[in-house]
Length: 121
Image 1 (spheres, helix red, strand yellow):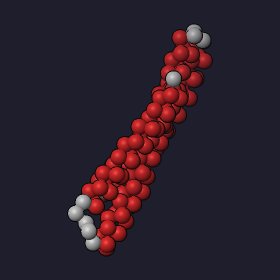
Image 2: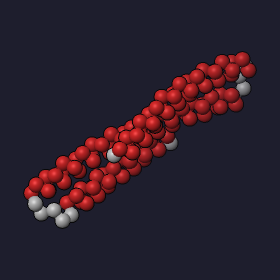
Image 3: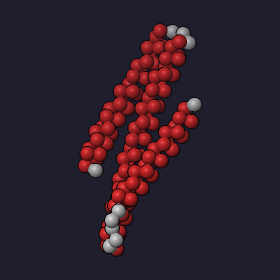
Image 4: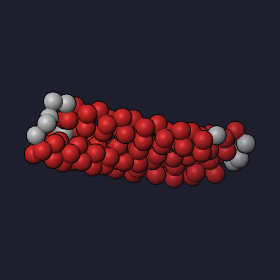
């Protein structure tokens, strides 16, 4: 199920990105008959494609990391329900919590950079 969800998310993001790039190209080309204006429109559209593609890639990688972290917590909960010793559960939870905390710190900075990039785009 998770693999189908990842593929669906990936294709949805690609379709949205292509639609945005096509809309940008169409808006740049409307009313331009001069050769220099058409060249400028293609350059602007290419820049939008590269910038929006890199931001989209960053969004996807952050979503993938967050999904992995939530899967790790879900796996821990399933292990707890299996009924191991309390000390064993505490050790595994400490490790899980440390990994989630470290990863969330990195994701926090990535989200800040994403917000700054979108603000200046």
